[in-house]
Length: 98
Image (cartoon, rainbow, N blue to C red; front, side, top):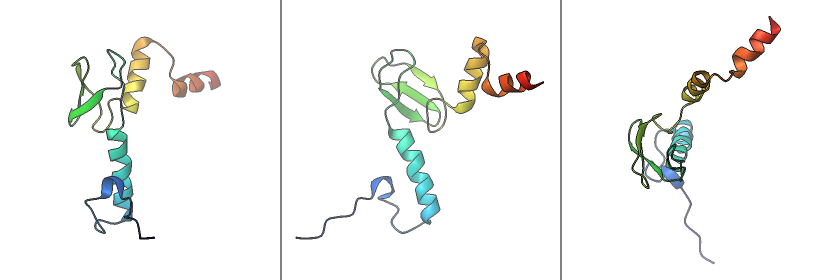
């Protein structure tokens, strides 16, 4: 049997350049960015990145801002929870101990 081609994934254009750590970090970011994301308005997995921090649902056309590589950031989730009035885990545990 012949040899098969190597599966390279998102780093296919980088070759042996830039170092292993940088390539691994790049793979992690690109796979997170390219995976299907849920639309906050219609709920379908149709959100695509338009530009840095700008995301658009291809089904309903809803355009919104988010993180550079993901539609929601960790800080944005915490801010939404605080705005709702729900307790944040970090602050709730600190209040119980004091």
